[in-house]
Length: 178
Picture 1 (tube, one colour):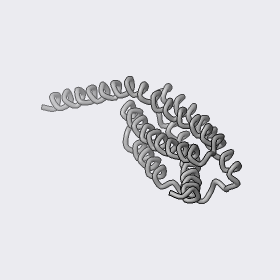
Picture 2 (tube, one colour; picture 1 turned 60 degrees about the horizontal axis):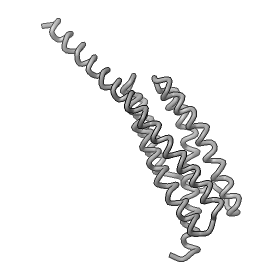
Picture 3 (cartoon, helix red, strand yellow; picture 1 turned 90 degrees about the vertical axis):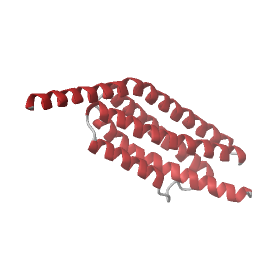
Picture 4 (cartoon, one colour; picture 1 turned 180 degrees about the vertical axis):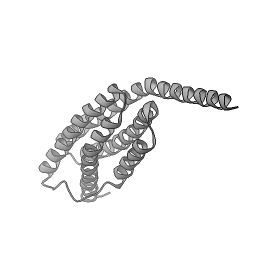
């Protein structure tokens, strides 16, 4: 791959990420509001602050490159955000929280893959400052994914217990009608 073709790909992928992060700054408050777990809500709120920092880092990189950050719609993130909205509309209680964690982890994995690639491109292109900024964001995305996994250990059990209680109540109601 020629250096100029790689640079074009790098800039295109950065624009995709920039749009993705901006979509998240709109979606995270909705996820936080929908969460029933205070711990999960606080996690979404912390990640919103972090995401705003990711946007600022990307803007710094674009400024250094002499490029505009806009002009690309991240369809992947658009789909992931839409799935999160569906989760909010279709679930409730601890099951909703478990679903929100699932949706959020899909987002994190998407971002981890994207930031890993653009960081590598930056290294190959000799964009050392950008590579460092992208590495910081990549590490934050990995940390968020780990925090979500830790929360899931508790919330998924609560969701399972909630289902068992509903099943038990449903069986008791059937027995009472019989």
